[in-house]
Amino acid sequence: MSKLAVTAVPAFDDNYLWLVHAPADPRQVLVVDPGDAAAVEAALRAQGLVLAGILVTHHHGDHVGGVQALVAGAALPVFGPGNEDIEGITHPVQGGARVELPALGLSFAVLDVPGHTRGHIAYAGHGAVFCGDTLFSGGCGRLFEGTPAQMYASLGALAALPPETQVYCAHEYTASNLRFALAVEPDNAALVAYTAEVAALRAAGQATVPTTVARERAINPFLRTTEPAVRAAAAGFAVEAGLNAANDDIATLAALREWKNRFRG
Image (cartoon, rainbow, N blue to C red; front, top):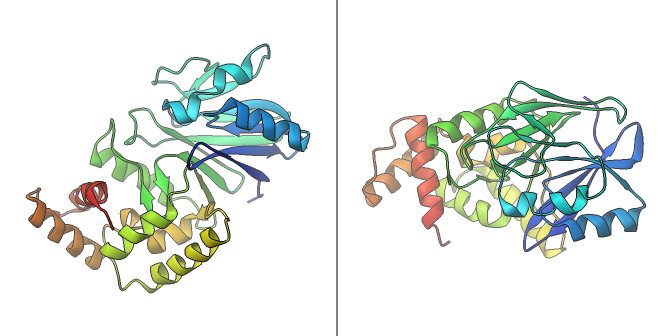
């Protein structure tokens, strides 16, 4: 797989807006989930870049708040989920579609990944996936509009991507996610090692994403619901919390998500 050149634009408290450089001309970029137009415009000016299009994963304001300002007076393609109400989308897409931008040398498969929102999508291609708030390093998004079954299927679709796929999620949540992951699976050696790596990165002021599919399969409890230790921990929480028994993958994920919602570690 070819690898994309991608630049992070930090925004708000912990968002990453991603600039995807066109292989055909690296000065031209797509922006993924531009919640803050000013941050994007400043990055474009500082780096001498030209905005060529927008990819949107879901309708939350910190992902779409800058779309209107960025497209004002410009005929830019704006791709986004076809079954969410997002102002400014010019190319509504859903799972099974492709985003084809041949002049830029870019092509992405669209994946349906509902759960966080009802119509959340991801864009996969060139050895990368832009997954918004569905999969985080060490965690997953809250279930604001979807069901545990939907999130389980969505995470499964992302986990099925090639192991070396670079995972570009939209928030710097890794350190807090790993504190929870260690509560679930404290004897996971890969998780313990990654927690130390993340602590060093954050102490140096560096980002912890992108991550990879392979890494997440090794350390992320939400992708490890078949592991006996993860299932046992989720079941124990479910009993203590008076929830349905965590006796299958979906119930395990549901218990983990509720546990994470309440976690104060």
